[in-house]
Image 1 (cartoon, one colour):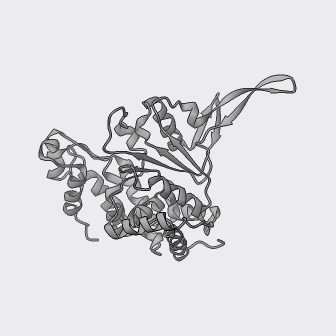
Image 2 (image 1 turned 45 degrees about the vertical axis):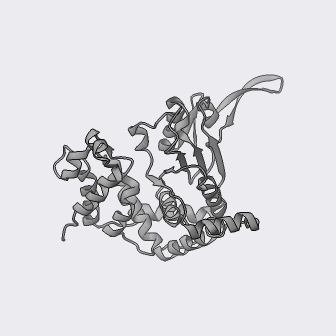
Image 3 (image 1 turned 135 degrees about the vertical axis):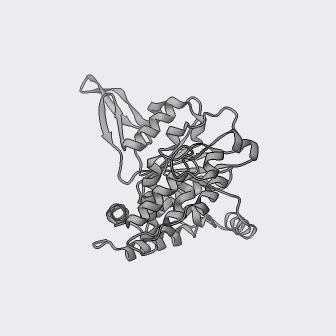
Length: 327
C-alpha cells in the first residue's frame, strides 16, 4: 500500500471480514472491535463460555492478516519464563554460554487462554510486556514484534481455582468483549460447515505493511474538541465522587474509569471511523466503542449487587444521561 487513506482502510476492513466470513459464522460486532483494537494498538479481553470458537476466531484472524500466532494455555503451574523465555546454558566451541530462548510471547498475535487460571506473578509478567511491548530477561531488553496484539480469554462461569485479574491489570486491556451464544440460524450454519465439509484454507489478503500503516493513520487522524470533550464527559460520569458524575454512578459505582478510558475511547473512535471510510470520528463512534472500553473499568458497589445491577446496566444509563454539548 503506497498511499493510505480512509477509503483504503475501509477496503482493507472489507477484505478482512470477507475472508473471516468463510470460516467464522456471526460474531460481526466482536470481529469489528477486535480489528479496532488491533488498529489502535490495544489489547482485548474475550469473556465467554467454552465452545464459542474464541480460539478459532483469533487463529483465523492471524491467518487472514498473515500474522505470526501463538497460543498459551494458562494453568496454575505456568511460570513467567514459560511466557517470556529464558537464558539456557548451551555449549559453544567447548565453552558453556547462556543463550536466550524466546518464549511464545514473541508473536504478532498472542492468545492467552483462560488468563485467570494462573497466579498473579505470571499474569503480571504478561501484562507488563503488553504495556511496554518489550521483554526483559537476564538484564537484557528485547522488543516484541510489531504489530503486537494480545487477546486474553476468561470463562465467566467456572470460578473455582481461578485468580481474578485485579482492576489495575484489567485496565491494561483496551476492550472487554462478551461473546454470546449464536442465533439458531447461525448455529445451524456452524453445524453444516463443521460436519459436512472441511474448513477452507485461507490465503492472506492483507499485508503486514498495510496493518502498520493503518495503525499510523489512526494516530495521525484528527479529532474535534467536542468529540474529545464527549469522551472525557463519559469517563467522568462513571466516577462517583467527581463533579459531573451521574446519580446512577453515585448510587451504584465504587470506582469509575480512569484517564486511560478516555484515551481508548478516542483511539477506538478514530479506528472505527477510518474503517467506515471517514477521516475524523464523531460522537457516534465514541458511543459505539464505549461499552467495550468502560464495562471492565467500572467497579460496582454492594448496593448494585443488592439491586442486581451490573456495570453494563449502569453504563447504559450513563450513555443515555450524558448529552453531547452543542458547539
